[in-house]
Amino acid sequence: MSDTHTKEIRDRIKQMDETHAAESEGFMDIRYFIGLMLLIYGVIISFTGLLTQFGKYALPEALVNDLNRYGINFNLNLWWGLLILLIGIIFYCVSRKPKEWAK
Image (cartoon, rainbow, N blue to C red; front, top):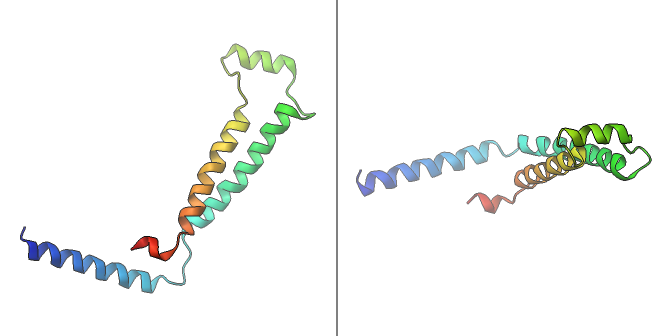
């Protein structure tokens, strides 16, 4: 490909991006809603994990022994909740990025 052809393609893509950005000014990014949903689920699951780990709703000793027998010796609710919370924060932050990042 020649340099002029490549430059022409880049200019056309840039023009399409600017047109699309101008047309979609009033729309919200779907990652915003997904991020909020994951944030809420992450908080709920992490809170449940904290309650079963330290609160009065701690798991019975027989269940803990049964889980340890299968090699699960950590709090799944707590760790999965924190992971979902982190992913939700990433989605939310990416959806709320300033417009100058897109350039």
